[in-house]
Picture 1 (cartoon, helix red, strand yellow):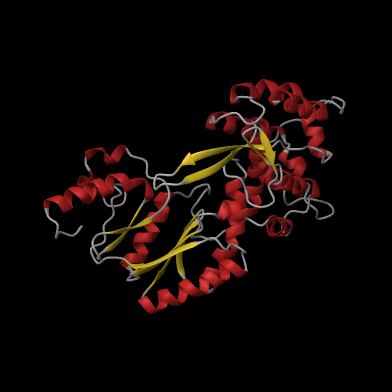
Picture 2 (tube, helix red, strand yellow; picture 1 turned 90 degrees about the horizontal axis):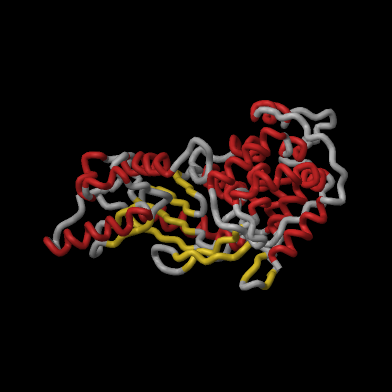
Length: 373
């Protein structure tokens, strides 16, 4: 079935005659073209298909490696495949008839239990998604909030943690932790497409993106439709998620709240318990009514006076508490609450969980009344 699907996709492209591939262009040239159009309607598809942009997309997908999709093609074969069929694929995209294939459903265990559902697109679809994302980033990224750190060039979890420490040091000792754990599975397609159309006028690109959203998912050899959500696993998904949640960022900025968002995790810092309770309720209403995301988890807790940062790059004088090997660790996203008896409640990065709990358990065994400091 896999080979049959791939053959059908190729047959779609074979209907178009060959033509000489256009010359390459630099990323800067693509960026300059985004603001040029005689009718004011940006021809995004042509910019996406610039040879330089497509080559960068292929290079990125190959570098990221990853498993094959439903057609079984590996990243090692994409360069030769795309070189051989490039003109036909591009023509299908220009004519708006390209049809993405279903994503392959994969279940990844979470460190805290449960599973994360990933959707693996075919390698060819990943290349096209990457090419689209590269151009879309030029349009959207500069409009995002200063306090959005996830999946953005030049920003990292390190920056998010530094901002977090600044808030704590300024005296904001209460935290509202919003975890939109089912966010990726609940994104409303119509709302997302409406947001995209405010800055993107090329209907071919909009149709292509909707095609990726509704391409379906393959589970156990059976294809199922996708009527909502953005499958995690494709290069385009993080950008689309940031576009949706930018509405939340703008609302928090309008209210003058101090916050940090990393993908679907968001923490809001306030100065009192009363303010935290009020913010938690009002933000919850906004998320449910405006973003139409009903499956959310919120926590409200104080940050302990003995603030503890396990990150060597943030607080090097305390890195010895976690052992000399911490400098070689990579700390990804965000944060979770840890309870030590009843106080303090400390915010620690997810990737540090096992290390920190091991260290905490040793401390508690040696002195059950001690506090982390």
